[in-house]
Image 1 (tube, rainbow, N blue to C red):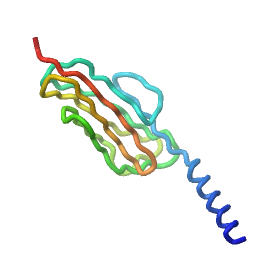
Image 2 (cartoon, one colour; image 1 turned 90 degrees about the vertical axis):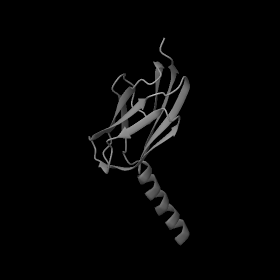
Image 3 (cartoon, rainbow, N blue to C red; image 1 turned 120 degrees about the horizontal axis):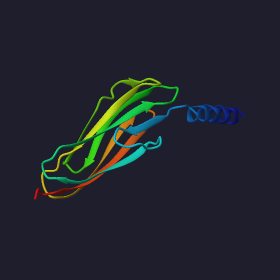
Length: 134
């Protein structure tokens, strides 16, 4: 009987945790997308050695804090990223991510950036093609 009561109590606790209202809205400053935890950006065909930035605003649209953990990059070294997200992002607060495509050589490049919060994460996939000046 004790195991049964503990199982019910654990289920109620997990159910409560799953319904916590943590929401992230990702909004690129160059185009509009719906709220989601995954987005992508095609930089297009750009010249070698050109600086091509794009920014996203991360908004906590939920009613609980988001605790920042890390910002990681994977893929081509021609992409660089930085974020203003630090510490705790309270409900209604925003921070930004900037990703720059700065290709050194001709060819196709792709990468992924992960913004990790304790409660959720955002993944941004980027890709582009570098071409020589004519």
